[in-house]
Image (cartoon, rainbow, N blue to C red):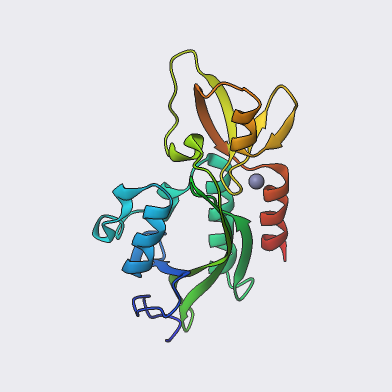
Length: 201
Ligand SMILES: [Zn+2]
């Protein structure tokens, strides 16, 4: 595959999802079967139809202002040919799965012309766990008086104000905290540092 080709070939690995974006950051190709599997496992059946995904800005699927800023920083670093590729290792949990992912991002160049980025997301390890209702909510919800709960967009841990610590959503609920929450997405210190290390090489 040349570096400027869109992604589209069937991938032999069940645990790899490939997609690409154009120079503006719009999704221009998705490896459909793997994407659908991933969307279903993430409790996002509305994303299964890849025809509705192509043409959308990739950052519209990233929760939280800070993770979106980090994404655009990575985008600009790769576009400027500052690094040949970026590799992230991060937790990306689904409601009933803990998942360690490795995301490799390749710039697509034809000579000096930038054609966007190709993403290859590989599941390194998964662990099944009881479904966590908090993770099933893609959008902020809760009643008008709901507790504001910060969630890391990468590892999906939440910040427990009572202990001033980041913990798993299942732990947060197990110790009796309210499930009536309004989620606000960001990055926990560990994930923020990991992303910055990747970007700064
Ligand atoms: Zn995190």
